[in-house]
Image 1: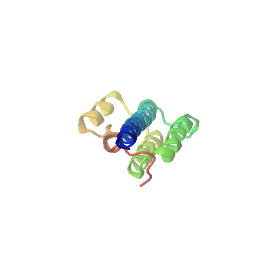
Image 2 (image 1 turned 180 degrees about the horizontal axis):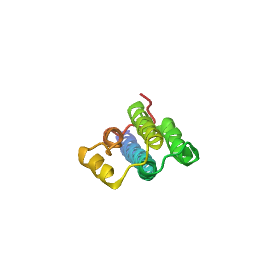
Image 3 (image 1 turned 30 degrees about the vertical axis):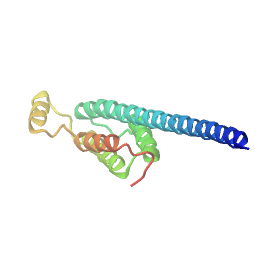
Length: 149
């Protein structure tokens, strides 16, 4: 009888050890998958933010030297903001919309001379993406995933 109990205890130990090993492996794999998803989400956001900054900067530079009523150049910028509405927090979207409004306002003002542009740069008035950059940095640092605030 003692041999049976010893054998059963040995089998129980093997079963518990196997189950523990399986659970540990499963939990490790699960956390690795979640981390990869977070990294992919962060990379996606960084790319979207970078694309917005590049397009907004290009359009602002154009707006300083060109006065026009045509909004066709703004289509890509509007599309980028729409994408941000899907995956970004409210502060990021609000800052992007403010930057976009600033570009539209600049298109409606008279063309600027080089000396006026220099004065704008010195005064910091051309730094229209500051709030957007801060909101993006904050969102990326906190690692929010698809949370709308």
